[in-house]
Length: 257
Ligand code: NDP
Image (cartoon, rainbow, N blue to C red; front, side, top):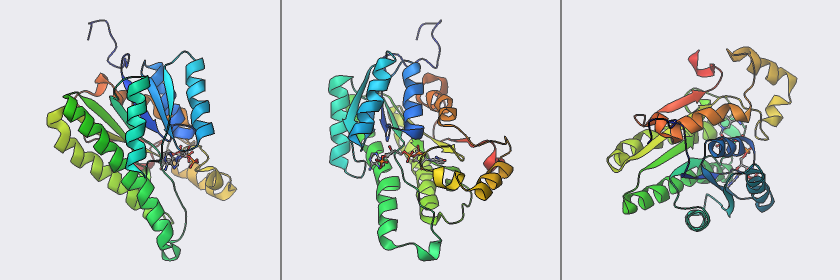
C-alpha cells in the first residue's frame, strides 16, 4: 500500500453483499462502493437487485446484480461466478440477507423455525464456506463481514429462534476466524441495534414500542441503514487488518447496558 493511501481504501477489491437490494445491505453496498470496491448485489428479488446495481452504477461505481437465494449453495456459487466474470474474484463477503419474526416462543411453528435457520444460519455458513474455499485455493486473502444482531448477544423477547440464529452467527464468526486466520481470511461481524428498515417497520410503527426502543437506547434514536456503512468499511478494509473474530456492536449503546 502506498504511504499516502488510506487504510480504508477498497479500490481494486470486489465485495459480494447478500440481500444487498435494500435496507442495511444496500447501505453497506453503497458505503463499500464509496470506499472504492466493486459490488455484486446478491439479492433474491430481481427487480430490487437490478435497481440497486443500477443505482450504484449511476453513482459512478462498478456493480453487477447476481440473482441469489442464500439458502441454496448452488445459487450462491453462481453469484460468486457471476461476480468473478463481471467484476473480478470476490475478496469481501457481506453476509447480510436475513429475516426476523416476532412470535412468542411457545407459539413458534416448526416450519417457521426451519425457514429462519435455513436463511439466517445455513445461508450465512454457505457463503462463508464458498468465500473461504475460493480464497484458500487461490492463496488469496479475504474478509468476511457477517450481520449478527444485538439479539445475538442479549435477550430480545418474542424473537427466540431469530436470536438463536444470530447467536450462532457470532460463534460462526469467532470459530471460523480462528480456523481461517492461517489463510489470511479475516472473519468479523456487525451487531446492529434497532435500524429503520422494512424489517423493523412494523415494530417501529407501534408508538408504544417505538417509545420503549428510544428510551432503552443510550444514543436516544433509532439507527439508519447508513449508520452501518462505516463499520462495514472498517471490517472489510486494511484498517482492521489485525482484527478478526470480533463482533462490532453498532447499536446506539443498547448492549452497553
Ligand atoms: P430487510 O428485510 O430490509 O432486507 C433484507 C434483504 O434480504 C431483502 O432485500 C430480502 O429480499 C433479502 N433476502 C431475503 N431472503 C433472501 C435470500 N434467501 N437470499 C438473498 N436475499 C434475501 O432487512 P434489514 O436490512 O433490516 O436487515 C439486514 C440484516 O441485518 C439481517 O441479517 C438482519 O437480521 C440484520 N439486522 C437488522 C436489524 C434491524 O434493526 N433492521 C437489527 C439487527 C440485525 P426479500 O424481501 O425479497 O425477501
